[in-house]
Image (tube, rainbow, N blue to C red; front, top):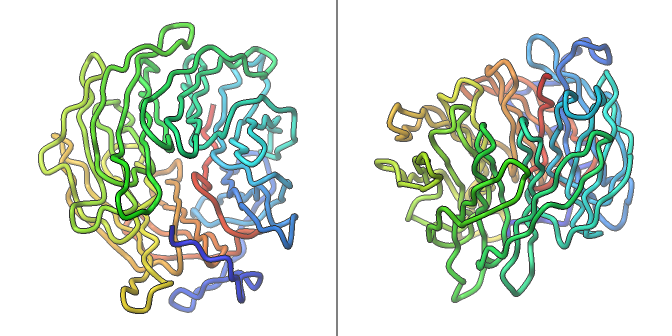
Length: 381
């Protein structure tokens, strides 16, 4: 992976883009949308691993609010308060400690640690907003991994429901259809001369959250990473880190029984070492991040973000692209659908782009090394 541990200048924090600075905007009041960055941190500065909270103003710009120390947690997802007695909870994978961390969410979005649930090597996470059922990919180094489901209890705790062996190496990204009927997990293999084939696997979800199937299984090539589903549940897209010239983003149509059919022209080029993916609330555009190559001068390529229009048949057509710093590795779309928020691993920054990928603001991520599934916009209840 194109991951740098040297962080010269990262504490200074601001990535200069077109000479822009971070303008002031109102924050810290109820009513602001909230954005969170999971900073993985490093061993030298334990406080650099945290969840950093930002207020999103009406113009899409962000202002830092606070940070909460973590053990390299990532993948923050929010349960609807209607399922937890009016209280708000969020959950994140803590792969370092083989746990899912639970957080109580205050009205202004502030997080308070509320407990843990054991699960082996948690990686990607997802939550069915209707169940609610929480899903986690159990990344198992050197062997096939698993996909687990948990029921969110009324008090916010997680009750294990089921675990399935995906019979593929290194489960990573997880996504659930909006109706909660199907969940998909994409697998990725480490870089090697003879990488193990990667798979996208889908399961049906019973009303109680139990997993059954698989209902879909597709070989996708090397290094699958993130998977996202359109808000109408019709199409699924995944990113691949080491696809080369074969295409970095794959698209599938989701059938009525969870089966997957490749969309026309469903394999597109999106840069080098593609990781993050996010879809606008209207379902009309997909954004992805590519870290690029910075540790090999002979192959150097800068990081970038690309936007693709999603056609009625699921076909992707590139609509915008922009160079985006050192290692842009994850992103989220604002609830207004007008702004894209990109975390940069190498620079430890958060950059705000317009829908057309024009950069308008860059701020420090308030920690070090924004992580996998590390940028989250809190949904409104």
